Length: 475
Ligand SMILES: Cc1cc2nc3c(=O)[nH]c(=O)nc-3n(C[C@H](O)[C@H](O)[C@H](O)COP(=O)(O)OP(=O)(O)OC[C@H]3O[C@@H](n4cnc5c(N)ncnc54)[C@H](O)[C@@H]3O)c2cc1C
Image 1 (tube, protein in one colour):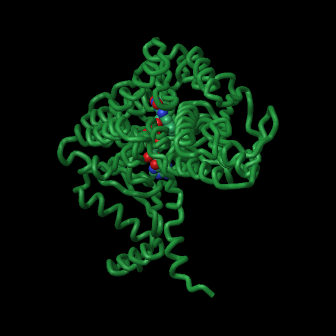
Image 2 (image 1 turned 90 degrees about the vertical axis):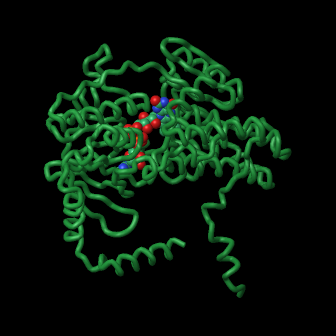
Image 3 (image 1 turned 30 degrees about the vertical axis):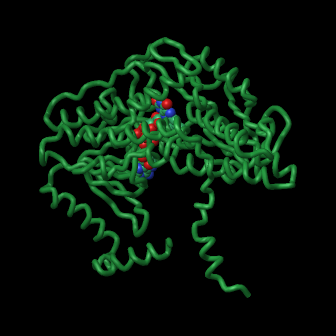
């Protein structure tokens, strides 16, 4: 299938006379055609189409006068991911397609390029783009918005890169769901006791939002699935382990709620190992800094994030953590025509007691920054002063599985069902676009009437296998 697609693309390019063009002239043609086509209006290039990228583009589209500037968004994915819903997508409470927003649909009037930015040369006002197929090329711009977000912050732990999986992308959430449900099938069908134990052992490293919520949701799913459909597996056979180097989890909801979360997870039989490190996991053999080693088929790494490493291949000023150094207006320090916000930006937190503090990497800041960023860019284009970003973190809500949650918002601490309900209503209200809100609502409503979906589509990884077997003559 992949080869066929490649051939079609090559044929199209050959037909268009594109195949023979040397890289540089094609690069120049692309840069020129953008400016020429747009009558040389300034090109605002947004690298990254996540929270910041999409909301900034939407804000610009709304505020720019007709013909005032062209907006281009570059992202390797054709959709923005609403990450707080990934745990529910993984647990099957939400259809994964409903937690992403197609960029081309919402950003009509903007140019969307599906490709990866591999370097930024701001002095030359160009970025290098690597499309899914074909040679990489340069794209020029007048104004740059850096919205590349963050990636998993990993450590050089033996085996981690080979057996671990992250939890930041919808693809990972889908893969993890299929993998976890596959493990139940494997455990229920094997006679090998060691393989069964290994299949039923699930390890999460990192107890922040992503780790605690994903573990909470998936554990809840497996308990349900085992109770309803796997008579061969007892609930006690499932082993879920949450490992964190700190002495608490979910720092986002504060100390007290963090302690409650540990108690709540422990009551459910989940082993919460605090002040513990993952030392090695070669071939799934898990060695922690404390306790006996054990084997696990599932190791999920959710131990924090770091700024997108592409920034290291740029001439923008970076702080000690590799984030773009910004003023409170989100203008890049020392550059009038470059802006940054979200997880990849060090934006001063003007509400913090310590003047050196920068805004934490979370959606609450990302969305608010993006909205102001769009206004600031338009203000600058109109010769007005941009405004400083100021937002006091209002707290957090987290789901720990169906009907269970924890919240700490505006100083009010809530747990159990009310917190879970708050989590749903808050995120529902924040989910971008009416279309997606409705789809999410329908998913939740359907879940009231029908049983939870516990089917694994793990075979999707190898869609051609069946056909290949049929098409291969037996020897
Ligand atoms: C599971 C999970 C749950 C979360 N829950 C919460 C929550 O409840 N509350 C909260 O406040 N925050 C939450 N967060 C954090 C929140 O989602 C992030 O802080 C937010 O997404 C940051 O927005 P951003 O635009 O900076 O980055 P992103 O939204 O990550 O966007 C970055 C974009 O850049 C693109 N990109 C990456 N590399 C390149 C490249 N080389 N070239 C071009 N584009 C590139 C990516 O594809 C992506 O679309 C959660 C995060 C996760 C993973």
